[in-house]
Length: 204
Image (tube, rainbow, N blue to C red; front, side, top):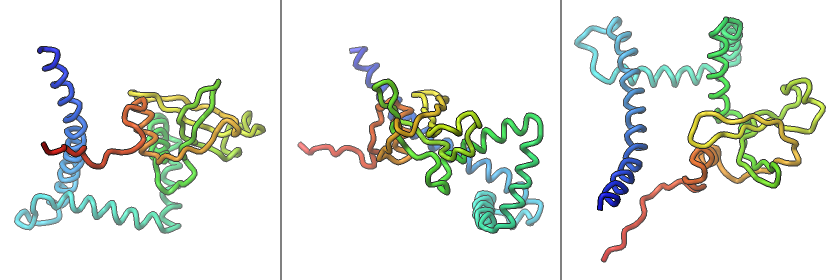
């Protein structure tokens, strides 16, 4: 009896936890945006003209305009110049470059960067993500080989391995980035297909 109760509680916990974490993350983003942008708007607008939620809306508007500005060549060059300065600052360059590389890995603007592949290693096959195919951007010692750089994520933890793999040992995998990452990080428990609808309950 107690074993059945414990199993039911664990099932409920793992069912509710992803929803709670997702809602909390969205809540944190909205509250943080409202707090930062709301404080800035109060310096500009009279107190009677400010309404709750205007800070969040202002944050979304700013993000939208930043995205529009980044389409301009001059703005991209200025941004690249600013990034170059950050890359030369001690400590900051290490943190910023790691964060920038992580977001670039999942950036939708790079079609070939981060594509999903299946890597063959010692008669085993592993799902990985190609992070670099251009030989000129590889270390000089690796440029004379027909190889690609592949990232292999580890299950249930943040981390993984970056391997230089011969192109002959890599083949395409018909999975999206989201599906492959979820599949790899959950050790295959999540499966390939995302569940978009709850299972139907047959009526008695």
